[in-house]
Image (tube, rainbow, N blue to C red; front, side, top):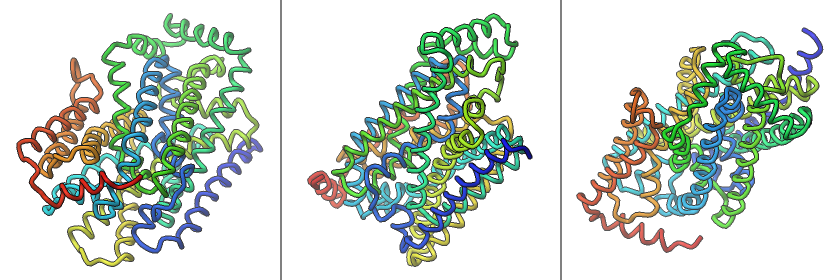
Length: 504
């Protein structure tokens, strides 16, 4: 093993050891389910903001989107980023304070399924069961994307076999998530969010300077694109660049629709429930939006200008998703490159750990304690949660064994699943007095089923990103069924009125 590889390996070992240490140090602070799943609602604005944004951005921010930019898809990246930034801002503005208040007012709920069950007084528990089914389904797919990112990273940096990279990612993520719970997840997410931010800022500046300034850098990137479109760089790049050049109105609508996901992303909106006070939401919103804007600019710069910076090396096919890692290895000394490459690992881990925690809380809190054993003590619930984390991770691991999977493809499917199934219900739960339990159940089922069906169809109208039709159908069905059902639940109406009167 040469000195360069040893230096990069040392950086990774230090980083991974630090994450495991956080998990160990946080384990003793989990005295009950509320601590394990929601940190006792004690997190401040900076931790909440960076944890929310880091957990939502995942490896597709450092691998999927830069790879798309590299292949000439910067138009799609721009509209997707714009939709996500708008969606994040509106979610912080309209969901954060309201959800924290409402989750406390309706039974002091600590999970999203529990919140929906308490909000709609669902004694049948159908809403809870359906919610958990969709959460486990889509989070398993999402977690698989994180494992794929880990495998690609270790392969591109150390030349490790794909499956070996999967195992390393699985072991580290499981260790601190199972031990530390929400506090460990948010602490590691804060560290990882900071690392991602610094990596993008520093690397974007250096890549522009190294290419002779902004004007020269753009000119060189355009020259690369011209060669790709002329077929000088191979048929595969020609096909990719030609496809991305034909960016239609449908493509723009689909890209912007990504922003709808933020209204129903369980691992993001649960951060709103765990913040220390509503007064700190404004600070958290500003921190989160700033982080997002800078990160997406970094994605665009490194992905697009990386075409020129990496010459004569040309990345094609799935290798395009390694543009960030290849750029880091060329730009920095081995140890520094290793630290910044940990940003990719950070992005993968910060998402996977959050999703595993939310999914396990849904199973243990809402299915096991809610349906199977209502009298279960806190230790038993935590034990079931940890077992669930392991089982979901194991299934995700199996899914990620398919080496043809792309990070962007896996994430887009799961993202649509959550936005289309939970987004409309969260908004209606917070702002419409008249929504009923039957309306919520009908909307949730229609939204989730639409995502799965639409995802597997293609051509014509089915080329629209599935999150948009699912969100619209869910909203329409929930409203229509509620109007026909008419809300006559006096307790639900009274609690909603009290919640609206609560001070921020």
